[in-house]
Image (tube, rainbow over all chains, first blue to last red):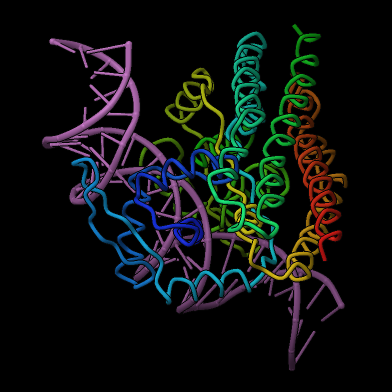
Length: 182
Length: 182
DNA sequence: TATATCATGTAAAGAGTTACATGATTTT
DNA sequence: AAAATCATGTAACTCTTTACATGATATA
């Protein structure tokens, strides 16, 4: 999947691994993330497979490896877009595993953990409700995104907002229930 | 993480890999899943590490390898419970990646994909709203779960229900928006 | 001058998926 | 008799994380 995310962004514009790490953190971080090590190695593999081509460029004395999409890469991206998902993505939520097996733990200790999670999820919600998407949309000149791109991008951002809101409501409900059990 | 899920369930009662696969599918499937191949290999590694011990048992002519938790396993489980999570779990949602990069796709094709996802998420919601948890709770005799177990288990189930409801609402919103763009 | 950011990588280990492989019992 | 379920595993591959490693430039 990371391959297609990288292809998708490189298709918007040629990019370095560093660029892509920033872009991922500030736009897809909400539903997909990757460490820089994985991004760099995946880009190299994609180049070996002929999906992208790279060129070292010097800018302000900095050496940057800029990747561009190839014809084969564009074909791969389009083939992926044309084969729709027929399954749902499985959820993996560490906290829920912990909650499930917390029957023998101290209730105040569980509450501490849940309250910390509430703070962290509120922080993520604040981040998504901040300036993330407008900047992504403004970076592209209006002509290049005549289509439904902004609608789709904002929708994925709204997913993140809904998710964090749901998560916080759920945490509040669980915290309230546990507070009556102390 | 799978290690702790397996330890957690084996701590409730000695189990086989097959048992654990069923239990995972019917209780944690909502926030954690694993293929049988991963469960079997993880159990073997855990046995090598002394966290569980296995014994072949014959039942109705079937050979079953039953795993029990060891003292070291229980200590490991408790140590994990005592070190709270200080981060949130990253979300990985394939569909959102696809939506993000659907700017050049045919809108009717996107809508088909979203409507199929709606059906699939509705199915999952129906499943979670079905009989999953009561049976898990009834399987244990009431004395063995005098604590807050049912409350915690039901809360994780409610997370799944809230998640699917949120997902469907989000899909409906996006579908409605795209329908105006045809 | 120290810290942060820019920039790119490798190595090793762990987690997870997919395919292969087998054979018994139970239900239709 | 066929299909489904019970039951256990291995092999190969891919994905992901964590740690190691380096060096330049920009900011405080």
